[in-house]
Image (cartoon, rainbow, N blue to C red; front, top):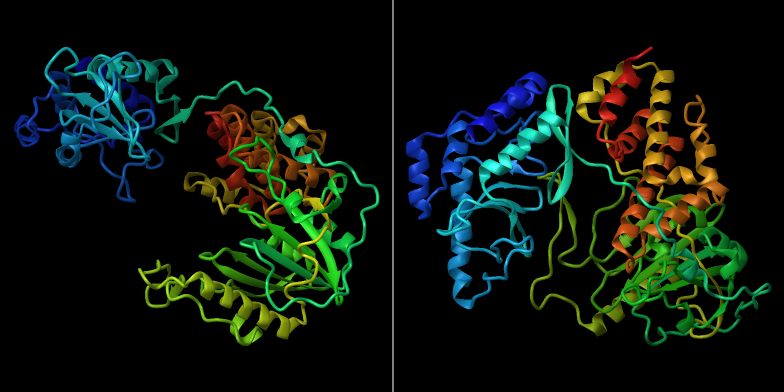
Length: 584
């Protein structure tokens, strides 16, 4: 143990002095003995030697240990101080005392071949990760005494990889000195940046994921869909069975234009009954989630009907902005007998107002919905609200007996529809919903906004000092590297767009262009629920890169950089980025 700590200290002092400075002084023998007595366990000699060298890590300015602030960590895990070991141990022992008699905490042999189980009162956690998983030392008497294992929350404790804490620390020292991969649940490599040690996920060799997209396009092509314009009078009550839906209306549009604005795939267009429009069960079928919109017209309004438990496109601002260009659009959504009711009104691409039974906070620039739609039911008692004194959004939960009955939810829905009818002259519900309507599957639009990822503070001064042309070159280089890492550059539309990133005037993304359709398709692939995890993770990384590319083409360079570099997978991207910002 002493030799491993000496090697770690020496490496940190020479390569990551800011991280070295975060290590705390030794714990005293008296404090260690008192801790063991309080916990009622015998500390293995390695644990005593470990604490006698450093008693954990000092927190950073934010009050916790962060590698980004120079805090020392193991690969993926934050070391505990002696006090934290005691606190964690007492908490676990209390849990053990409650459940031990039921046998719920006993388990099978560890999955890696050593002694294991769910938990034991004589396990001591000495490090934890962000998910509350822990590295533990086995303090039970016997052959396993002193072994190090991993405890995964709600899954159990696994031993067998490290026979002692000394063996674990020796592997840490080997990884630092050799720059080699160390696997602690996940695989990490040590990286130094700005005098700090960072454990980065080791890059994996990525395969080309299987596309499940075509399975979502299995409908036959109908060259000339039947028109479904209805002149029948709307009914006074909702047809039965509409538990999750969104109705979107656009004034003076026809079915063709409404489907185009929703993002319909032409090859999927055909008349459908309600039963045919249901989205595939994502837990039963490995299909891409491509929602269906059924459309019709009545009294000068085109309407689109969506049903299902997926995200309803008509509730998204991106969709309503596009649907309302040059006209007016309003959507009404209902999430079942215990779900919220919402209304959105847009004029010529701009939000007018939003109403939501469980959300009383207005978006910036929106008008009060109760002024726009006279007679709306009041917000629920537990609706999220803005607290002006605390300057925060406060969300409540319904108390027993407060939640409306199914009949009251239906009454609220009809009251909301009545206000929309009076304000906009829209027929609610429109006629023919239970019949066969023109329809198509939708390739969901890209989100308008980015994720608000800022450039890390350590790069802020370099970014501020870089001339605009150099900053654009850095953005182009980082985005190109990200596209290569995730396989996004395997598409011709993407490689052509990457060439435009260093230009002074970046073009953005044109609606329904080849690039827009490609990026939307990648996002659709990432929404598959029932799929091989390896494939799904590749699609999700690729979808994040697609989002980053959309930002890089549209946003100011500094705003776009945060997400681009935040998605990078090469452990050494920081060194590349610094060089790109400073080298002439």
